[in-house]
Image (cartoon, rainbow, N blue to C red; front, top):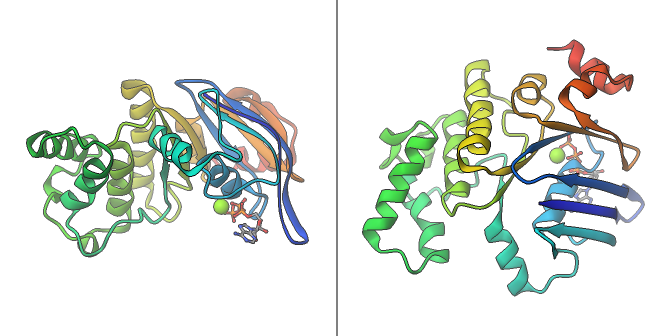
Length: 241
Ligand SMILES: Nc1ncnc2c1ncn2[C@@H]1O[C@H](COP(=O)(O)OP(=O)(O)OP(=O)(O)O)[C@@H](O)[C@H]1O
Ligand SMILES: [Mg+2]
């Protein structure tokens, strides 16, 4: 579903991405870990064209993202949802309006009744049907994240990118969000890429783990292989859980 080949990106003297190769198989979830500032967010943003790499290739469903024209990028973004850490909700709209908005924009063929049905369905998917008419300012941090996920999945992208979906959440909400990611993989067959510093989330959601160090993928393997890896960072990661 996603194939990254020889990817490079630098910002002036800072060169966080120096030859990344990584592929994510359809219907699986790959977790990306690594120290702060190693280019994990840059990698996710490059996949949806929010950052333009200096060199290399990113294929999404065999379509090249690097250098894609705006119209093609729009198509790619319909296929690949990006879950922002904050949820990125519009504060002046209710939860229901926030969810309806991307549908009205991208699925013009839907009737108002169909939009309402879908909004309700996805609120149920994230376990918050009672928040339909709530304003974002009245939601807790964890609820905002869940609504953010609902707003991204409502257009039914084939692939979801999550940047630190559980950071700053209580253990119960962390588990709920992690299980939601798993649920989306199993029930909607969504391909996932998750950047996380959270050992608990990693353990629940990962089929595969990729570890970034010195600008490259220093380790790639299954969750079990990651657990047995002798990279010090991964050992520390697993000793925490
Ligand atoms: N738009 C930008 N302009 C300039 N420098 C940037 C930009 N985006 C990222 N960087 C730099 O690139 C490096 C990698 O940033 P990135 O956000 O990808 O790190 P990260 O691995 O996601 O870290 P964290 O775990 O702390 O979120 C950092 O040194 C950052 O300062
Ligand atoms: Mg980051």
